[in-house]
Length: 488
Image (cartoon, rainbow, N blue to C red; front, side):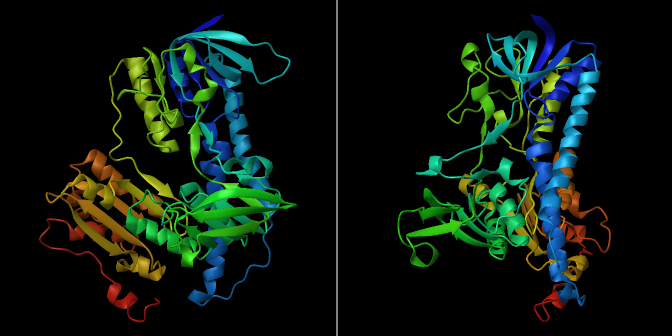
């Protein structure tokens, strides 16, 4: 048996705990059965955003006549798009693997790790002819990620379907597509396929898409997706059947009555392909946790304390198997926490209060902190300000008419939440995150600094300025121009 100071199960964000340990002179190992880098690199964030960038380019060309520029799209080489993205992301994964294999420490084990006891894992190798090995770690870090969830829909076992993993690298663009799931994965892929010309139908259980967002955000995303897709919000897939090369999905009203979508209690939707985007589940079932003292909750996520240590001493967990924040940047943050606690006994605790996230639809969405609905449900006293993007001159120039910045703060100015919809939202949210994390966390931390003119950050400035304690203001407001004929 090979023995190590630290064993990390998972080759994504958590692998950095092992590399940090090796730099400190400790013996470390990484166990990974799939591509290095985790889901983000080869089947998540990076390839999906590369696809969405192509959709954004198509949309820019399609909108060109609005700005007095004659342009048209002659053709989309779909296979070239997906193959070039595939080659790029897998080259990155292969480079990471080569780098680890060339290093004596940490040691890379290619295969699936399953617990034998609380510190010992049996690694079943990816290569068929290789023998399994046992390794032991004084400290074990669990970071095995998650995979697409397959919902229990009648008839699904006899039908062809795609998951978000499968949909990223199709050789051919489907002419028509039904997407089951109205969360951020379904919304992003619905935008991508719809923008490139696929006839997309989306089914979401809630009355709006991306229902976990602030209500104002969900409404804009739902309205915007209806430009690219037929949206059946307030419906859920009840049955699936295969009809030759076509798939038929029967969707029923989520609330069981006939009040949805013009009075239809149930609809039949037919397409070339079916995409399930109903969330992700943790890979905890691959670990044989029954051989340990590591507990899981009803959703099969690993139970951890504030320091990210599990219910088993010196076994830690991070990323999608924890399930608190299902984002790559959250896993990277948790990796820093675990690394400090394992290597330095720092006792650091996680704090997700200023954890941002983004949705890469058109328009983009970015949020941090609480939603207005959450504050109302908690009975928290708050003030709110919402400023449209076209209050900033660049927002007016870009004709980002459905964009806005919404700020939620306590009466004393403490920032409780911020929600941005519009171009570059995923970048614009960052100054709010920095204010919440590093400053006093008040609206003045955003409103007081000088903002570049003309830049979209002026929309953020204008929204925070409305709740600022400053006596004097120089925040821009171009709404009198943008509203003049309703189209600028």
